[in-house]
Image (cartoon, rainbow, N blue to C red; front, side, top):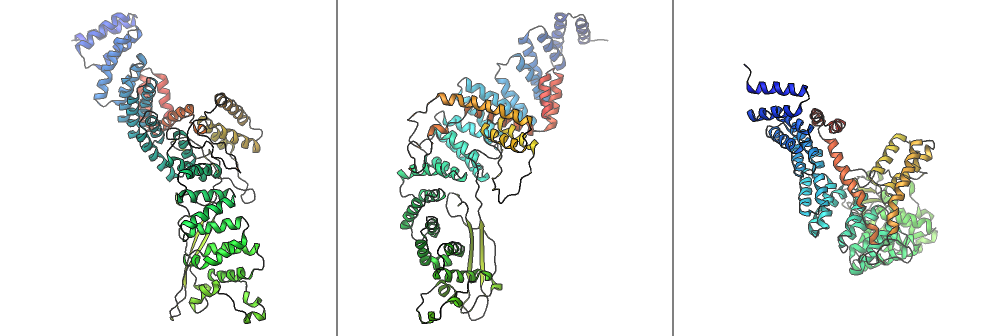
Amino acid sequence: MATNKDKLLESAQKNLKKKQVSKAIKDYVKIVKLDPADVRSQQKLAELYVRTGKNTEAYEQYESVAIHFSDNGFYLKAIAIYKQMQRLDPGQIALFTRLADLNEKQGLIGNALAEYRNLVDYYARNGMIADEIKTLEKMRDLDLNNLNVRVKLAEVFASNEREEEGYLELESVLEILSKKGDFDKILKLYKMFLPFYPNNEKLQMGLALAFYEKSDFGRGVVILENLLKDKPKDPDLLRLLGRGYADLKKWNKACETYQYLLDMDPSDLDIRESMIRCEIGSEQYDRALAELEEWKDTFFKADRLDHLKESYEILKEKLVDNRTIMQTLDAIYELTGDGDKLLNIISEQEDNLEETVVEETISDSLLGITGEDIDDSDVALELIDVDEEISFDVVEDGVVDLQLESSLDDESTGESAEADAIIELEIDDSLDLVKAKKDDLEFSIDLEEGRSEESAPVAEHNLSADLEEAEFYIRQGLYVEAEQLCRDILVYAPDSVECAQKLKEIEALLKQKQAPSTAEQPSAATGPVFDNIVDSDVNFDFALDSLQADKTAEKKIFKTDVDEQIAADDLESHYNLGIAYREMGLLDDAISEFEKA
């Protein structure tokens, strides 16, 4: 015997066939009252309300269905229902939170971040700062490795009188990027945040170091010179300045800086080495030789024979037939086992040298303690790491250290000497200022280290990969890099139509980007740093205004970073969610989920 519910369902079906939707709605209303747990009938009733334009009533029915699915663990179905509700009433902000929570429970972290991102945009537009920060904190906690979210949070903190919290968040991100060596991204961050912290010396020092890492010593020196005004005796600043001057080949300034440091601490052999290099670089060869002769024993005892060898070999070419240099090199070659380089100084001396009082050489002081010749075959070489010359993790460009630690036994046992050789090869990373590897922050782009034509083989070009990389640059707003890459492509693939089209697109984007910047004149009172600190020899256009972040690019980064996380989530969940959307008639959303899967 048919129940009242069965009769009502039959009646509703007949009314729908007759296209009498209003009567069918009445039937389903009665069915829902008879059996509130019948979510299928509730969902059908909601759909009929939508067909008749009764969105409020439809919203109520959908909400009841969504709560049922959510409470019973059917998260994908609940997500599909809430999406339908969102179409009915886009202004319901609470739906973003519910969708984010359900996506998180389903393991769709990227989708959850996308919903939270919508909330962040809404709160930002409506000046709801506290809610914006709270949501960003949720996003950060949801994915601690999402550096872009953390940068956004730091920016919101800094721009809303919560500078200390913003600085702590920024420091954490900078530390992670420093460990990765992503100095291009670090530069972007400094440019973004220095306007918020114009007097922060630590950030300014960090910016200078980042410029050094990118071989942009000019701008790094400008910053350090400005900082030195307040701390004229800061040894760390002076060390970095000396290095910058040397790399810029401003030998006089470099020598003055290193001499000042040596006056403070004459025993600092790192600075002493740098001083000698500067003297050689400035062609003060006699002065460099005198200093080497004075300190050669100390260098040897400190396991710095490599520096002695390098310096004396240079001076041998500059001060030809200098007997002191030849004698010292002869002794060094004996210590290092370079038998083929022995100069045989003694055999070349004149007969009357026996009557001459000869000053003690490095051969006397260093080899005399052995009492016998060193057997080359007994010299052991071991590769180990060496501490870098400057603190702050800034490596000296183009330096090749070859250190030999000689431990000689003067006992009468006849045991041979052992020596530990320390080799450190540091390669100059000649990179442009704004290139980097793609990562979660998405501030910058991949870069291959430049190689000279003489030393590097001809690279094999991959047109498809290069075009894909150019497209990535465009998506990230890095138009200058994209333009350069396209021009490089056209060198080896001049007939590439796709590349030519991309180049036209980039040029148009560059014009759009440059248009607003030319209309605005930078203020003369932007801040106390970088304004008039310009070296007399080199002019650097480097004011604080040049460090302003591109807000449009920043928003784009914030969006694309979350999108990448979406793509990384479980493909099965995306596929199942697509099925749920399709069943709800949300075809665009279904297609989107299928594409992610």
